[in-house]
Length: 172
Image 1 (cartoon, rainbow, N blue to C red):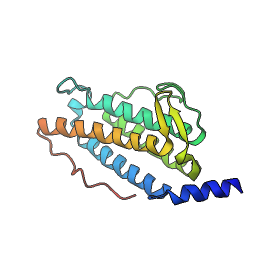
Image 2 (image 1 turned 180 degrees about the vertical axis):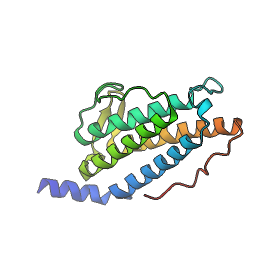
Image 3 (image 1 turned 60 degrees about the vertical axis):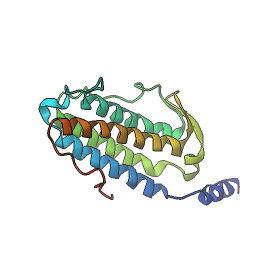
Image 4 (image 1 turned 90 degrees about the horizontal axis):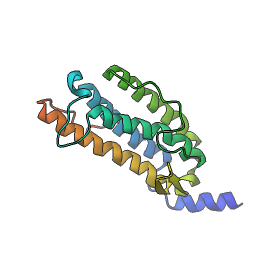
């Protein structure tokens, strides 16, 4: 009975369903993937502005956080950031980065249905660093990706490349 009451309380707080939140995130991930594809190969690992990291380093961070987050979101057992899952070898080509991107997308999609609805309201300290409800941490993952994608938009424009429209996110 307690689980029913907890689920009822959680359902009263829902604005988006779990599936809608995943679709929103994957829409952003799809746009970021298109941005990676548009990025000139010769600048992907080296081009910087104003002390910002190269786009490849920004994407490495986004990939690592998303990949390592799924088990913690499900179970509450969080590795320290940069530890835990078997990391693939460091990508040295954009094709390898895109393959890693696709693998992490599949990981997110495979793990997402395992997240109980009530879990989104529970408070964890993700990676021993970020304390808050799980829904807040998922928003952080999305916001962090958008932030780094914004940096890449600036990079592309200074390289004379027209980036994909920021509002054109596929609805998955």
